[in-house]
Image (cartoon, rainbow, N blue to C red):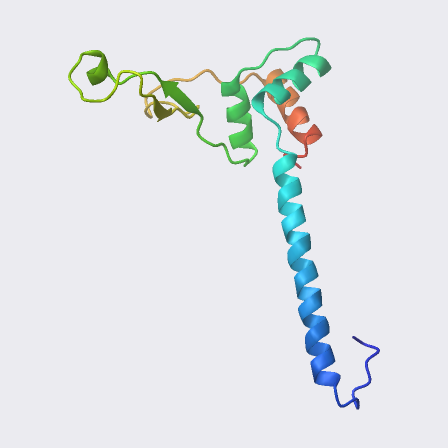
Amino acid sequence: MDNLDVTDTHYDKKISDLQRRLDAQYDRIDEVEETRAELTKATYDEIKKYVAEHNAGMKVSNLYISQVKRKCGIEVGKNLCVATRRMDCLQGNSTTDATDLELVPSPNLPKNEDSRQLQCQEDKESAIVEALKHFKMNS
C-alpha cells in the first residue's frame, strides 16, 4: 500500500481493494485463533490424567478442577447430567413417556451460600494449575 503512486488515477480504488483484502485476512486470522483456542481446551479427564502422570499418581476431582479454574478466571460451564425420569413420571402422575430423558444442569457449585464444600488442597491446586498451563488454559 505504501508503494502505490498517489498520482495514479486508480489510487483510491487500489487502496480500497487492498484494505478490503487486508481486512478479510485479519478476519480469517481471528477465526483460526478462535478455533485453535477451542481445540486446546482440555477436558476434565485430560487434566486428571496429566496431574496423575506428573505428580506420582495424584488424584484430583472434578470439583477441585472446577474450583481452580474459577480461581484462575477460567470460565466453568455447567455440566449436564441426565435424569432418567422425572418424579411425576415415576409416580404415574404424568403424560410424559417413562422413557423420556431430561437434561438437568449440575454445575460444581454449592447448592446454596450456607453449603460447605471441600476446598482443594494446596498441592493439588498447584498440580492443577500446572496442568492448565500445559494445556495453555492459564497464563
